[in-house]
Length: 95
Length: 95
DNA sequence: TAAAAATACTCCATAGGTATTTTAT
DNA sequence: ATAAAATACCTATGGAGTATTTTTA
View 1 (cartoon, each protein chain N blue to C red):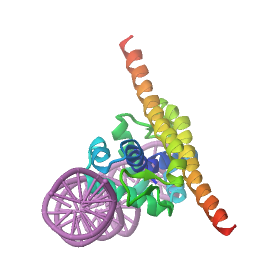
View 2 (cartoon, rainbow over the protein chains, first blue to last red):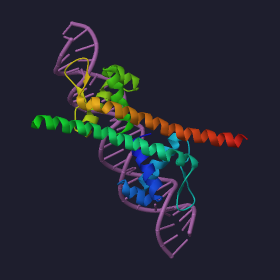
View 3 (tube, each protein chain N blue to C red):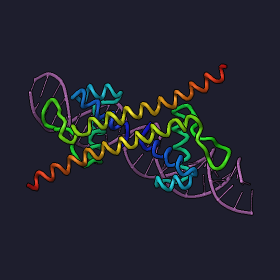
View 4 (cartoon, rainbow over the protein chains, first blue to last red):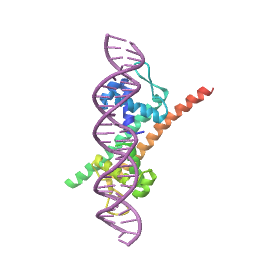
């Protein structure tokens, strides 16, 4: 499981549409489809109900949504923490 | 930035030694070295002080450690949430 | 000088693309 | 009929390997 897959999963959860979600993630529809399938394969669980439009989350997908969001958010904080340090250094050098 | 890279980063932070950290991550020393370098390149910041043994975290690396740990932990919860759902379904079917 | 890290290369797995087919409205 | 998802196929990137060359304690 990688952050990229979680981002794809969340984009689809929000857009409920592969084409729009793919666009948001700057990839193509088939790429997103593959990404979601590979995540489902790894977790050994379908995350979306197929064969009905619009696409819907399964119970497992629903359970994943919150934690996935927190994980992505946490990764954002991690990156920001590093950036903050860079700025701190830059600031110090300026003085 | 991917979870794999954060795992590698944390393993090195704990082991302070590429060979041991790589072993822990089930990869080889040069692979870990590359992984860390690519993370540093992406963040545009050195995370470890080189040219001194044992290897030590930079300020940026130190700032990353906590958030990285929380991110990995959060990803674990995400996976567990899905597993719990699977078990819930299995339980229901058994009844 | 004996460990550890970096580097140079090689290979292959897979993320992501295009084209097409299948399926649900 | 038409819009969306899945599938088949292809390519290129980069993750990870082996072998070797710096390093620094």
